[in-house]
Amino acid sequence: FRPRRGRKNPSHFATEVFPTGYRLSLRLHNDDVHTFDEVIEAMHESRHRRNAAGSAMSESLVSRREQATTLTQHVDSDGQVTVLNYDRLSTAMQGFRRLKSRGLHCSVVSTPQVQQELRARNLIVWLSEISSAHPVASALIVQALIQVQGSANEKPFAGLCCVWKESRSIPMWASSDADERTACQRRFTTFP
Image (cartoon, rainbow, N blue to C red; front, side, top):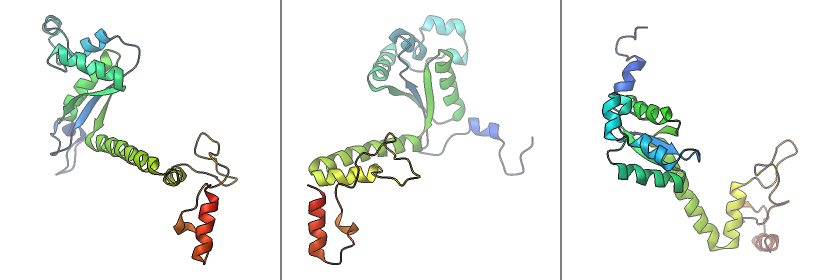
């Protein structure tokens, strides 16, 4: 395989430095199988064992045992933790292989993925705050997020069952009544 002039072959991307602001994060996930000591040892190998092995796989992911202990506690309490951030695919894969070789559940995620997860978390907090302000706001949010009633051919989104048999409120912009007073009365009688 020879790349065309000006194009790079795929193996080149493994060693190329990422653009500014783009990183790969090595994540460790809780598997409820490995002990604290096994996880700590996978991230921070003792100096004696590192010298005996002498390969790139034997290098510690974290420099201090205390840091490995803290990360392990986060995995246990939060379900996952970012172990390291990388600016090259090749080094991210070394860290990934090190944890995988110990039987740990891990992943490599990109900066855009991390940002998307943070946006989703912030959106959930924001929607929770809005929905706690008033029951109507809560109903509108639930209606927007969950399919209330599907057609005969569609299966409802939430656990394959309808949350409500019919809508619980009608937003004012959805009313088709020409008379504003009738539309307002309809909205109030729909949501008790």
